[in-house]
Image (tube, rainbow, N blue to C red):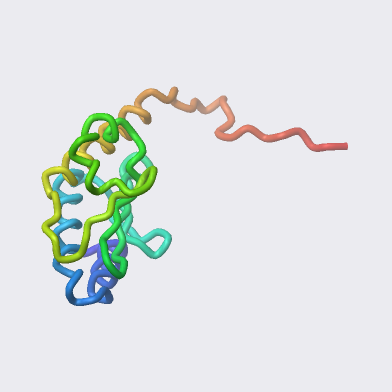
Length: 140
């Protein structure tokens, strides 16, 4: 049975312009195959994948499909491959009607998932006697 997030992404793709729908489905499949444990949702009205925090977003635009954010080590690891698509500090743009670089998408998603998992494993666990959040003392 599909989750509410999966149904929301289905609806997002169905509402997109017909020429871009195949690209969105292909991008979605690439992300899901690279990070099968990621949870699919909508956030900021875009398909969003969560895995130990924010993993990746994508969105359809008039002339391209965007993928966000590209902010971690993947920028260094795949700099040459990302170059034709990296248009801003953390944004990839794939022109509508051109083939998606699926192997690159998978590599980026896998690298981000690995980075997110490593970040979580480095955090010390919260014990019962530790407060979960810091509270500021009340001002007089």
